[in-house]
Image 1: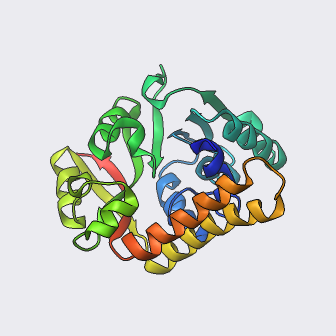
Image 2: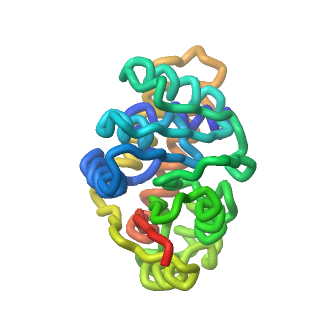
Image 3: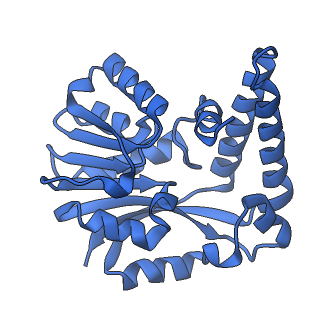
Length: 248
């Protein structure tokens, strides 16, 4: 199975592709969109549009643009937008996020759990700066080391020690790049556990429900492997922080 298909199946019951509860997402979006009644939001790596669709449903005068390489996820986003009655307020682009450009800037730029598309947190912020309106906000989510990673954690994540820093160092890097955190959220262990059980559970359940599908064995193997990497590797080691940032 390709990575995009695995991700779509695994997020069936947790459409936000990050360890954040619905309550945390709502609180972050409320804070991110509160400064203006009518605005424009851009998600660079929107997937099925979970963040943008929630924002549009809560803010009837906002408009949004989503960019992603997964065509099937964008189709799902468009279908959900139609069902919610917000499809006329969202534009969806099947495009590498690094190639997206706009003549009109955005009041809010999002990238939560998809900074790999730009090669890391700081390159993501540099790209967001080019698309942001004066006084605009960036909502970005990134991993950090909650504790010193053991070899099992690094192996489970397929990561190197230098791929992340601790929370203090990560925040210092953001500040040094010219950004000020005006709000934020550190995902709890409960949010992490809910996310990982939802991810592995949805994928395994799909395999159980479709035993004759040619991808059933691969899906079950991916779920079992991911569960083991999490529970015996990086659980309690990898943290996740979502910053709301302004320039300056």
